[in-house]
Length: 141
Image (tube, rainbow, N blue to C red; front, side, top):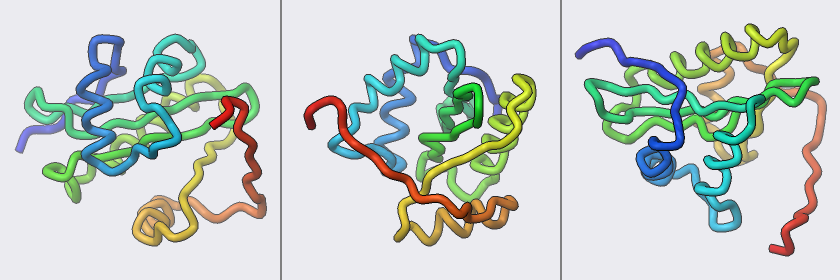
């Protein structure tokens, strides 16, 4: 199989990226993936990196820098392309994107019961942090 092509996604990739997020099980009813995608496209401190395998969207990652820390969201690999190193390649691409912006640290959130994803990140050298994530909806949902 050919090497994947990694590139920054653009507005025209929205449908394919959102479909991939849905196929990878990343979307939740309380978050509109189209809104998330379009906000990322409109923000110069954020990007979506797309991995294509022979022209087919195979995996994506959303990465952003808030000026203090880098954050990763929507790392997903289409089921047909899982276990081929695309997740690892996209994490490396996200780290490079952030390093190019002098970002000192990358953070991400994983649901507490998502043991397979926790194991994936642990294998890449990510460690639990002594913080708790607190949240509050501002959109009335």
